[in-house]
Image (cartoon, rainbow, N blue to C red):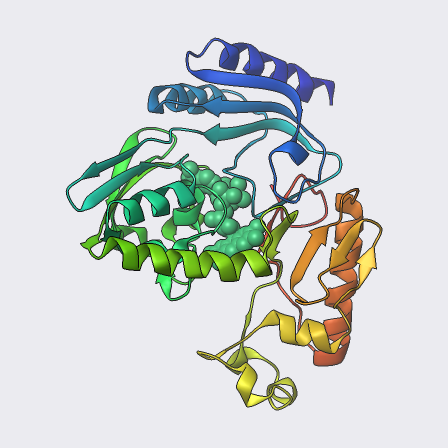
Length: 331
Ligand SMILES: Cc1cc2nc3c(=O)[nH]c(=O)nc-3n(C[C@H](O)[C@H](O)[C@H](O)COP(=O)(O)OP(=O)(O)OC[C@H]3O[C@@H](n4cnc5c(N)ncnc54)[C@H](O)[C@@H]3O)c2cc1C
């Protein structure tokens, strides 16, 4: 343990000498995650330029201490014990327009990118209105909603692979449903992305974005401490045969069944553990009512998984990512 701490202190010394990198010690990750749960990061390092990021990655490569990359923290569950290492963020957030193309720094809010495209009368991103988080993570997980995915208009991505800065075309990113090739290379840092958009009627685009905002804000009020949908939806054909036949056909869309349907059947709505609750109106929406703890959230998730397993004979899988837990797939 003390060896790890010494290492981390050495890395802190090195990181603190990098220009354009801000380093905070024992920073509560509850302040940087939408769930507002979890303990501190031993170090939180914010790089604001590609060079600062490159230098930080080089320093991390030369030390054995744990580190991880996060963005806006909207898809994470952090352990109450926090993360005993370096939490790195890339915060370059510039948006640049060149005719019908917008290039965004990966630390920009996805919503800022959407808003700037709509304001410029450029179509192709407007349905992503109100998906929380930053551009980099949206590309990493190919975020999408209302029939649009962030990859649809993407033309190229620059990223740091730990050794050097590289560029990939859309094809090279191998986008698929909520995934990209970057998921196979955790720790590669997306720096920026360019989107080729279509000129359109500005007020029509704004009206569409506004319509989506209103629907989404009702489902996910902006101040709700949550991570969106907690569990992944299910592929109907991959469910056990006896379970497949129990799913009403109206619940199967594009071959998928919402996890919420199964959760509702096992009484999830309104279920709570300490300060963590399942929404009364949406069984796959779990939130921190104010004073919740990550430990309570885990107990609640485990109980819901146990119930679904007992009733339907399959295991729900989390859509969110865990940070700092010893006993579940996390980093
Ligand atoms: C209320 C609510 C509604 C949501 N609705 C939707 C929805 O409709 N559609 C949808 O797709 N998602 C939705 N989500 C999930 C979430 O918004 C997305 O997963 C989002 O892209 C996460 O962004 P983030 O910046 O918060 O990433 P984080 O949660 O901080 O990180 C997520 C992952 O991205 C990786 N990452 C972060 N930055 C980079 C980078 N620069 N380079 C490489 N990897 C990086 C991290 O390592 C981590 O593995 C919702 C979440 C909430 C809270």
